[in-house]
Every structure is written in structure tokens, then in C-alpha cells.
Image 1 (tube, rainbow, N blue to C red):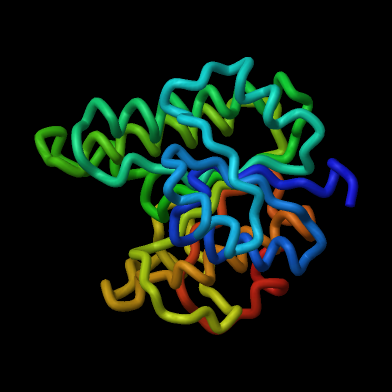
Image 2 (image 1 turned 90 degrees about the vertical axis):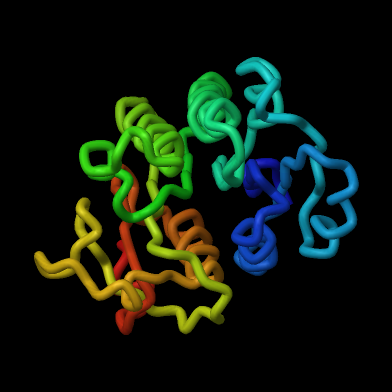
Length: 228
């Protein structure tokens, strides 16, 4: 397998990344999973990835570009996971920006980021005093920075994440997270983490949805028909 068949996942110990790794392997890729904590090495290896211990919160653009060079695609599936607003900005926005710059510097055009379905509009409707606002601000900013880049990007925007198994089908939503101009009921605005992993694998393997934001929920349309 050549280096051009390599996918680098930032946030390699996350649930979506661990589910995506064997799917990417089955699609013919090797996977470098970037983790901060070396204690996560065994679990990442068990999923089929090559663990790379690197703190993306402190790694500079050159260090990331060195890792990315020669890869087929870069996936940003990392996140601070709540906690302080400062760390949310540091990981979900600043580290994402550096990884976008590093991907361009390394000549890796294909870049996939995991966002969420209403990231484009929440900046204007979420109370700035809300504890959720720093996450909104970070994800919105990272998405906009990626859209303005020269990369062949895909932004994945799932709804509320679940641990339900994927049925390989989805419902596309618009940039407001709406379906056919309507806001779905809350119990319909959910997305299986495994489905996110399936869509991630699909857009890389098929070079689908380049330059697009794919907002989606669990649904009835096969991935290959919904995401081209």
C-alpha cells in the first residue's frame, strides 16, 4: 500500500474515528490516528490504525504538515469535549485552522472535518452567555476558515450524535439543518456516530461532496444516492 493510500485522522481516539478506522481500512486505506494520550495506543491499534502520539493543541503548522505529507486525505475529528471555553477555542478552532494550513502546505488537497448540522446559523441564535456558545463560535469559525481555503474540503454536519448502529442511509438537511424547509422534530434530528463514520469513508473513497457541506440525519436514502 502506497503512502497515497494513507488517511490521517486527528482525534483518532474519538468514537467516530474508532468506527471509521476499520471502514477506511476495508476501503483500501491505511490510517494514521493522531492521539494526545499514549495510553490510548492499544485501542487505536485494535481498530486497525497506526497511532501517532502528538498534541494537536500545541503542534505547530510545520509539524502537522510533516505528518500530512504524502497522505490521501486529512480528517479533523478532534474536539475539546467541553470544559473551558479557552480549550474549546484552542482545539476546535485554532488547532483546526493550523491543520487546514498544514494540509495546504503539505499539498494534501482532500480535507474532511466533522462539524454539526446547525453550525452555520447558531452563531446568530445562541446566547453568547450560554456555555454552548464557545463551541458554536469555534466550529463556525473553523468551517468558515475551511470554506475560504484552497482545499478540496467536505464539511460533515450530523445532528445529535447517538450510539445506534448505522443502517447506511440518511436524510440530507440544508445549511440551516432543515429538511424540505422544515425543522425536524428533535427525535428526528439525530445521527448515528457509525453513520458519520460511513459517510466519512464514502466521501474519501468516492471523492464525493467536494466543496460541500453535508448536513444529515439518520434517514432512508442510501449514502451513495444522497452524497455524490
